[in-house]
Each structure stands twice: as C-alpha cells, then as structure tokens.
Length: 244
Image 1 (cartoon, rainbow, N blue to C red):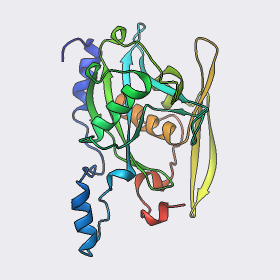
Image 2: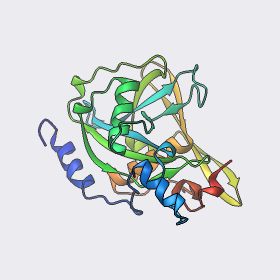
Image 3: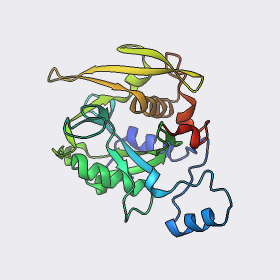
Image 4: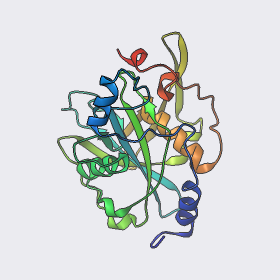
C-alpha cells in the first residue's frame, strides 16, 4: 500500500482479514429478484437495490497519531433526519455496481471526497433500520489527508467534521437511553463531541452503533460500556417486522 504510514499499513492488513459475522448479501439484478418473486420461492435475505444503502467510514491518521473519522451534519433543508449527524453515504442508485461504489459515490457527492483517495479495506455486517433499509458500512483509509479538501454539498450537508474513532469505545461524553421496540429492550447511545471551533455535535442512534462496531474492530477490544443494541439492526427480526 503506497503513501500510507506504518500504522495505516498495519491497519489495512488487519482489516482486510475481517469477515462479517453474517455474510453480506450481494446486490442482485432487479430482473433476477423479479423472477425469484414471481416463482413463488421466498426471497428472504435477498435485498432489492432500492432498499439498500451504504455509508463510508473514512479513517485517517491525524498529526498527533490519532485515528479519526469524517462525519457530516445534514442540511436543515432535508426532508428526513435534517440537522442530524451521519456518516457520508446514501441509497443505491442506478449504475452502482456494488456497495463500495455506492459509499464512494455518495461521499464524493456529499463531502467532495475523491474515490481515488480512499483505500477500501473492509465491509462490516449490515445493519437494518426500522423501515427495512439495509445499510452496509464500508471502511476506507485516507492515506494522504492533505490531498483531501473538504467540500460540503450545501444541498445535503451543513458541515463536515472529524472525531477520534476511539471515542466510541469510551464512556466519557456518552449517555445511553433505554428504549423498547416489539418487546426488545435496548440502549440508544448518544456521544457528545465539541469541535475545535467550539461547535457541539451529538452522534447517536444507527450512526453511533455503526461507529461502536467499527471502533471495536479497529482497536480489537470491547467498549467500556454495555452496548445492548437493538436486535432489528442486525436482522434478528424479519423484514416485515421492521416495517413501520
């Protein structure tokens, strides 16, 4: 791997060995899904492209040696999740060959990150939100952070910032709220972060859950707190159960 520090090279080698606990169902052509559906055979586990999304966990090494990850504050003009913190990413679009391409395309559109700057090393196990959208987290390394100049798309992104990845393993600046859904009691985690410019951000819900999982993998240890994530995130309920 050219251009990366020794630490990033070692991290890339480590993450390339990662295999998700549950295999990620590959994208299938829509005509194949239609044939499966019309034949009367169940298509459980086969995700239509329109119900699939990918996010990019872009990790880089700061000047002081910390591993950090880019996040965005969504535009207040968006119709859904406006003003919330999220990872760069979005739904599959026509022309996307796989989840990696979806994540890289969305990151380019949202924060101006050129795909050529990102060295993709792993994909995490998929997460499913309450409306049945399957989200695939893609981990990529930014080897040359100087080459990337943040450029937020004003139609989608209000701000771009970065946080230390390890914060999602620590109990500092974190709180958990117990919730229940379909009889499943779980914790919703909230992480508070104050940027160098004084701006305060709250990273929570699915974004926090994905980053807890990513940090546990990168640092090879469990968080300092009890996770108790909702079962529906890991597909332990059926797709019909996940619909609101």
